[in-house]
Length: 135
Picture 1 (cartoon, rainbow, N blue to C red):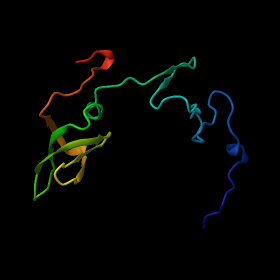
Picture 2: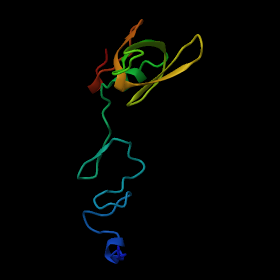
Picture 3: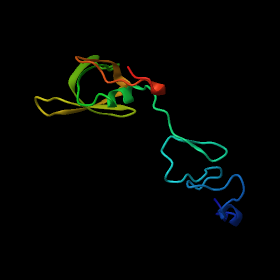
Picture 4: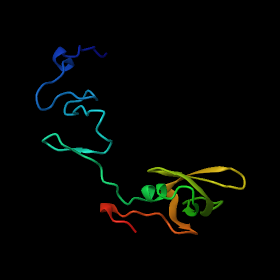
């Protein structure tokens, strides 16, 4: 049989010093002020360095919302269709998904970027390079 052992009272007290208990309740998880943007770095001196926009597919797609796109997807081990092409208006893009809609039917598709091979557009893309340069 198991015997219930009481949790030490000292472990229930907040820690003090350089490894204070933060928002998560774990040692070393420093509390972050709500005014700091998500993804920002905080230097040892306490200065906030905002996140740098990077050239990820999700960010490029977000710069081109509303455009018609053709997405080429592959699905391994699928006997019905190994490869499938989706065409529609780019509605939204996230880290792991893309949402497009068919203008004729209004039907929306939530597609996982895991299956994405490539995307084509019939018009020029909006694209801003990192470090402030633009194309």
